[in-house]
Length: 300
Image 1 (tube, one colour):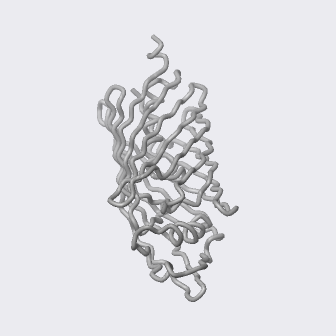
Image 2 (image 1 turned 90 degrees about the horizontal axis):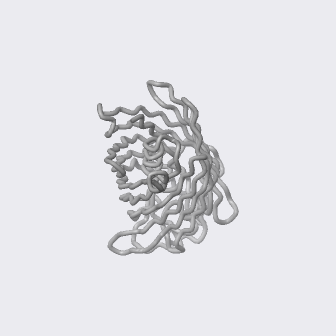
Image 3 (image 1 turned 30 degrees about the vertical axis):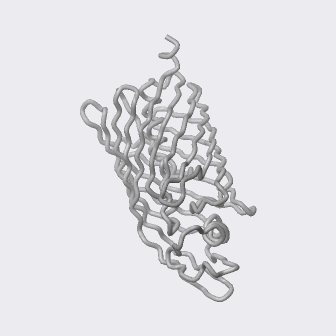
């Protein structure tokens, strides 16, 4: 079986999507790219990290999803994120997506749109995002695969962000091709309007814990906050990841350890102080179990 993995956009929201997209591609290859299929998935992430940024309070999620993928390339996917922890247990995010996949020999890609419905008490670093339009284009160079990614975020308050990313990965299989290792390097750049809105709302307004966060020790008493780099286009994050995947019959098991190395510290200005953010590297991971079934097999 020729299993092709497209490591996907961290742009979609939670990094769990990296594993979920890989699982969809495995299912698509197993079904020989001919028939439509459903994919059910349940994942876990130990913290919500986006562009190397995270809240000072960990946000671990259980993340169930179900998607339908038509043989024509069109798909629809619905997912929810359940926040787990000692203090907060709630559905924190509901996320429907639709889009189109295509592949032709060495070239493959995707375009999609996603809506984000966050709980009003969410302290997820992306809680200001309302929707996005995303796309990626991958080219298989045989010795490695290169992917160019782009994304537009629409934020609460009328602002928007534009991101681009470059990802390079190489897949190594076992002889039976049931198990693979996919070392990946990704570099992301863009603006930070989402981060400024997050500071103005979630970090300052809906804080439930005592955490401060990333060098901004005086922000809880601030009434106004601005990030001078919010509209600038900067390199934001370098990520090193090592996705592991194993499939057995209709099941796909995935694990993805990730090291995020954030770039371009924000300068946070309040009414009485100017604070330079102290960014730190973050190690986190996602794990997933997926079950797929081919519509043709179900009909037979």
